[in-house]
Image (cartoon, one colour):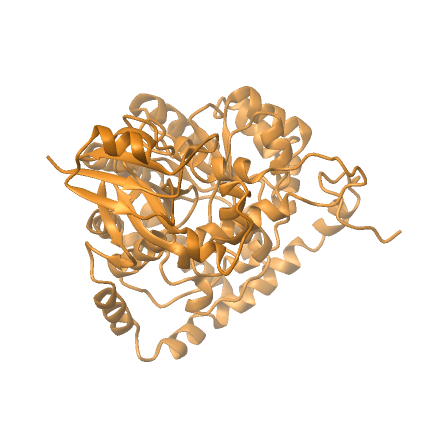
Length: 509
């Protein structure tokens, strides 16, 4: 029997349970018991002991929304911009297995033991091989994943009829866009639904959850959304969908359906406790009530929303009203390095905005920590297994250097979760366990050779990458300008909206 005793100066079982001089006892992949070090060491003899008197022990962190890119879009050549234009870029392909391995290594080094991967295909014509390579990488690295193939078949270029938009383009740019439409059609609704069914049958386990990943209600036909809802019910799958990320998306719902996109989903019977809505930046009081009544959850992506100029999601109000909120980096985290603790810190600071009421409430470190652990596990379908360090759960946990966090001096009376979210970052992560296995041991990866992955990834980058990137994006730049021109008449409608901000930041008056 493989047994472990893990101890530290502070053990965080969950956002409400913090034990000074705490310890855990683990058998195989499960947590058997926890308590003070004296209690656990007196009751159990373990094969291996981990920790120190200067260790902070927390549950494994959960990145609740992402797209699995190891090399970021910035590293690949793209600078941030508004979402509707930013999304149009072309990258020379990178080996999906190596890139996903690099994703896993960065996440583990940041204390993330579970992640969500909403996969947009690099080569729709070889979708089966690409999905297989990505899932093989997660299994090889040992990180837990909720994997969702992405579906996007409607309004690909603008929010409205694609063909009408294409008729406004030059012949060269129109032919370029029609080629993208044909290429995208290789992974259509039929292929998507069959792939989700097959992947679920082949891979679903406590280590891999297969999810539905329709990209957004404006990008998926109503009939397909209804088929996804039906299949999710049949197979017991969760659904993850981007909703109302930008002002233009909000306006599109009002123009197309006479209601918000969340209200449209609710009317379809799509919203339910197994649905998670990504972003939810431009939402109303009525939208929040629809989320609450349906039991649907939300993922908040603070860095991404700033980087692609979406705005700030009303997370305080969502949480206050009882909507489950989790946090994801969305491959556009604020520091561009997959430091999940830095992303939690950003979330904590964003939702401490100004108020004339000096005693006004705000999200606490414990609230944010709950979003990054327990809530993340719940929205990805892993809630029965992980998210806390309770007895019987899988042993996914992180050991951090508390002395380094406090160096050279920090007041000893601070709440440990305040300490973590004020000062902790990925460089303080020392040891990471998933399923009771040590995947990072005092800063060294145990199951995969980091240097080999980095070397192979570098070798896989074409020597003429810059030339290929610039050639591939020549027409993309023209397309971005055309899309910006298309939406110009929408600006006046948005400017006419009565502004009632959730967070009052400043004023011209």
